[in-house]
Each structure stands twice: as structure tokens, then as C-alpha cells.
Image 1 (cartoon, rainbow, N blue to C red):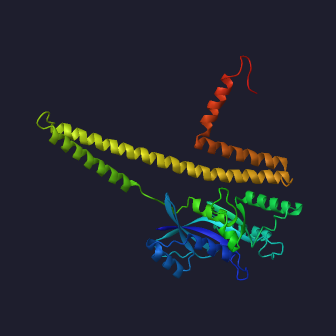
Image 2: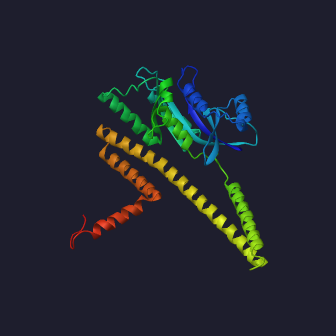
Length: 341
């Protein structure tokens, strides 16, 4: 790949224990591929000190490098380029966290990354690391207020707030859940991000193979028909050519229809991922409102923006047409002179 997406992760201090370093190594280990086609690239990345992984799904492949804040990103070869695509801020979520690793220490890190142009906007995560249940899960009012404060800080700066249990059990759990949390949510966010370095997988080879098969089938059918009907009703060359072309066109049309369905499914999957993000934002706004940590004016503004995003996603998913049809049906069934408010 000629391009690499850069995700800044930090802080990476010598005295940060096993928080940021553990999270970065856990992410890269999860995505480490054993395919022979990428073994040489992985060896070169390791020699150059790059924490690089290849994100691969049925739609695209992308090369992602997890580099420290303000860390130099020397690419593997001079011909390759990098794009700042994201940032992951990590802090110790325990009450006994030091000043350098507590949540409030993220203000300076965010401002520094913003000034140095190391603040990508495709993926922004704010991760509170713990080993076991979250310290804010004790149900006290103080914990709820602190949780709301952190969520509001992240919303104002475009981050998604995630509390990650980095114990072995915590990292292994939740990957098959629909609404993922913790480390599983981090992996989901990295996997579903549309990275700038993505290389879409080609489908032209499949279409060409199907078209060639259709041509061969059409020619065989035309030849067979000509052999069996030569004595009674011989076909001209023009008729055989017309039959072969018709068979080819039919095969191409079927392939185009299949490709259109695949593109539609891809667009719906992307819309569903975005819808999950919007629902999570709405949930955070509702919790903040219940905790009285947000003014009415700010709540209305955020709720309105979230509602608009959700309506746009519903339109992409085709829910809007069904709703309009439902409204028309309900209106037509009302007695004369009665209108819906």
C-alpha cells in the first residue's frame, strides 16, 4: 500500500505503567494478520518501530499506524505517504490516578495535538483504562456527575467516550454483542472507520469472468442449435451471432444487478454504523440531562442536532418513505372533518 493512516495515541510516557502502551499493543495484536501476503510488510514495520496493522474487510483494505503523540512517523519506504486520520487519548480512570494520567490531564494533550495538526477527525476516542469494573459504576451521585462531566467534555471536542476494562477477561468479552462496550467497542470503531488509506476491493475480475462464461455458453448453445436443426431449419450466421449477443447481455445484466445489490448493502451497513453512533450520542445527552449537568438551552441544541442526523440516516435507510405512506394511510382512514394535530 502506498498510503498509511496515522492514529495518534497517548500519552506514551516512561512512567505511565501499562495503560497507553498496553492499549496500543492490544489493538495491534488483535488485528495482526497471519496471511503470507502481509508477513513481509509486518516484518518491515516492526524493524522501523511502526505499530502498523492492516484493516481488511469485504469492502476494502487499509494500512493504519498507531503512533505516539508528536512521534515521528517514518514510513517504510520514501515512496509511501501518511495521512493524520485519528487520535486516541488514554487516561487512568481510577480515583487514585496521578495528575499526569488523570482525566483532567487530557486538556493539554488535546490542545497540543490541535496546534500540531496531529488531530485527525475520522476516529476520535477518549479511553478510560481500568482493570476490572469501572470505578464510576458504583451508582453514587458523585460517580454519575463525573461520568457526565467526561461525556460532555468529549462531545464538545468530537470524541467518543469509552471505558475499557483491560483485564484479560475484559478484553475478551463483548465482541459478539450488538451494542459493544469497552475494548470490544474500540476494536469495532477501528474496524468500521473509512480510513483515508483504504483501497477498495476490485470486482471487475469477477464481472469479466462471468461475462466470458456467458459468451462461451452463448456460443455453445448457438452451435448446438445449429447442429441439431441443420437438416430441417438451418440458422444463418447472423441469427447465431444474435443469439450469442443476447446471452452475453443477459449475463452482464445479471452481474450488474448483483453488483448494485452489493453496493446498496454496503451503503446500508455504513448508515447503520452511523446510526449506532447517533443513538449513543442521544443516550449521553439524555443521561446528562437527567443528572442536571447540562443547561436546557444546550440540551435543546444538542437534541435538535442529533434528531436531524437521525432523520438523515432514516432517509438513507429508506425509512422515510414508509413513514410517509403510513401517514397517508392514517389520514385517509379518519372521518370527514377530522385532522391529525
